[in-house]
Length: 384
Image 1 (tube, rainbow, N blue to C red):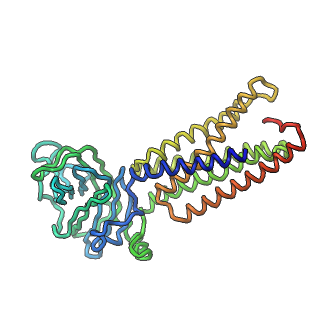
Image 2: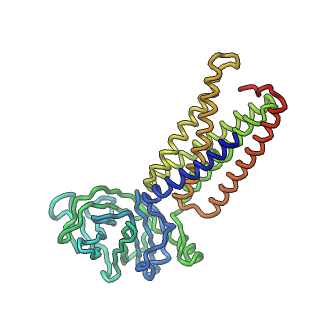
Image 3: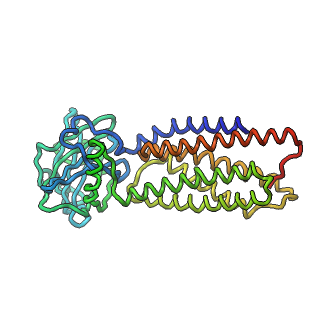
């Protein structure tokens, strides 16, 4: 059993090292530094993932000048951010950036007047007030950064935003049909708190607004506590404390049921978070769905538990034990992966690492004591 635990931990580390870069590659992060070319005019901005791979950095000063850096994964084509008065595309104005075929950066304002046709997006028209000398586009490490500054006559609060991207490089400032788009309402007032944090951390602050940040913490905290702490404790009770019959059984069932309910709440928070920011992290999301499925199987195991003298009991034991081990293993992998792609602070990494180390040391010690007791008593421990 000790060898199995150690091997599982090693395999978990390998899987994380394989899955984490792939997941990170699909989600631009606020934890990364801006390109050097943008540091002077665009440092100290608040930051929030907003949709798919899109990340929005922003700050509006006391003169109502809004500085924006929109970034996402990029190979070719154009990327745009529109400002709408009513949430609709028609009638809005957009800042669109791209890297030209000759490697030159382009950023222009477009007036969005219809959904199709030659006059759907008219260049150098719109209601946005800007100074073209303040705009720039940088492509670095397969990411595009579209940076611009806009002057408003009022302080933005809840503003209708449109994001879109197209695969074709604009020719003579003609935008190709977009590949995908979204619209949402963004609260620009959250940059006040974030800007204070940015000052504290010397221009490297991270904030994503109270609503998504609260969801992110709830999703991570609930799942870590449920799948990463309570469930391992329940499994330890079932394997190493069966001499305390029937107390071990009631503790095991009670703790695992509580862990499943808390974990389910964490999943609900994750679904709400995904609907808010549309983060494209298939590895983390796929593992989460698989873990939830295994957790449901464990709940069903309680209701399908045959009597100890049933001929089906050994098959139930295989099903219950191995699905439980898979839950614990993949939950550990997904927690580490979630902390990584979510840009968790070092306190999350250190806290969960310490928790995992304590669990592994406890299991090794209890397993040694169990095998020592078995060697002295050939009678097998009763199954449950």
